[in-house]
Length: 238
Image 1 (cartoon, one colour):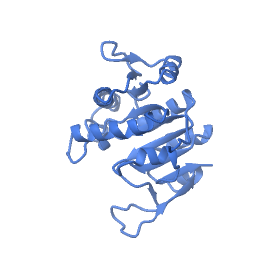
Image 2 (image 1 turned 60 degrees about the vertical axis):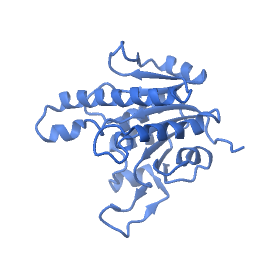
Image 3 (image 1 turned 180 degrees about the vertical axis):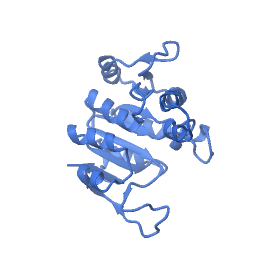
Image 4 (image 1 turned 90 degrees about the vertical axis):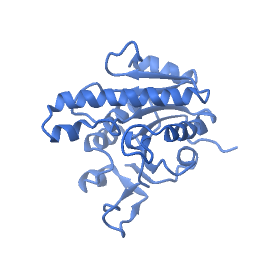
């Protein structure tokens, strides 16, 4: 039996990861796929928390660039993450995995408010906890929220599951010779402004020595490999 390297992790899912082949919204097939990926480590006894972005529905930064008030746009983005979180909860529970959604904004009819001790207790009882609505404050991304929650619940690593294989030395979409970076330090990411996570998230992870792993969630079995092998995509630490 393959043994996990970590007891408690935070899995950061981009909203775009839930789109699948769609140009917008949530792909039912992708939801089922992601739920199965999470189940592969849940069945190993790993305590799993997740933070889901909202870019497949609404992105506050993009809306702000078009003239919308940034605070209002970011609040709309928080609601988008709640929609994604509820969808992921439904997909997980269909696979028999108990879950709780906790939000940083008040939506009592839909989910629990975020309470750190309660979140930890849910994890200890074998429930997947999904953190929605970022940090509940505008101007902060869900990447930063994921790092913060990982620190608060004492996760051993933050896994960022995205649609690229990891961190490259240049944009692989425009440069076919771009090289994958297997290991990087926080300072390298910050000084070179490597755009894998926002700089606030990287700085917060560095200040608290939280390891990060960036990998492509579209590769079947990638989540289990990230947790068990630890050799996937790009690892960022000191």
